[in-house]
Length: 125
Image (cartoon, rainbow, N blue to C red):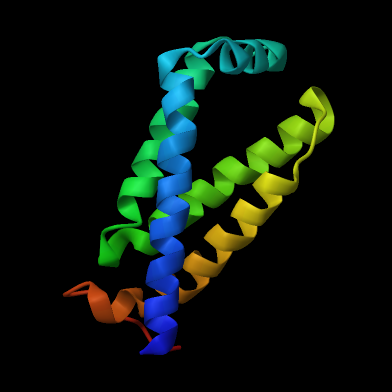
């Protein structure tokens, strides 16, 4: 019970961080435009990243889909770590912390998924 509450608190905090992080990307804040410009993928990628962050954060609020949302957001953080390490410079520590948080959420929620999704049958080997 305590573990479940702790994971929910983590989910809500992580979702809030991703929702707040997506807003400047969508709003076209100059720092975000410049950063995504430096990546060389075009500004469409800024909008795509924001949409994926919002989608993943939203999934964290749906018990049966929280594990999937966490995996999606973990993937975004792997990309962010690579971007900072290989192209942008600066600290990748915030992305590493969020990666650890999303992996933790995925670990706990994916284990619970079979019991949360009606009709999902696990096969035994």
